[in-house]
Length: 115
Image (cartoon, one colour):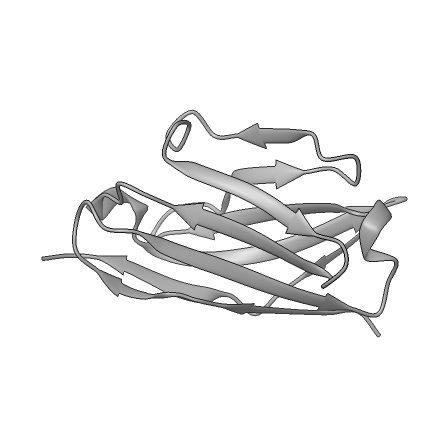
């Protein structure tokens, strides 16, 4: 079955960096769209960044220039490099894959930006 396992979250000071990873299994990773979403307390889940099987990327305006999504098809893994982190980036970050009308989510990893 499809599995998405996020890692790399934690506590970081404002201005710091984190790199999230999402290890995928159970589907043909190289052709699937992959994305990172986040949900802060009391807020709706929102798209942070996405990458297609061909490598095209999209970013939320709030993270452009600070976050970078990438994928390693040989390792079935998608990454989110987060730089210049702000307290507003505090949220649970979720990995998602979708293709042909099907979608799957990971369990999420907490990112807390605080001094």
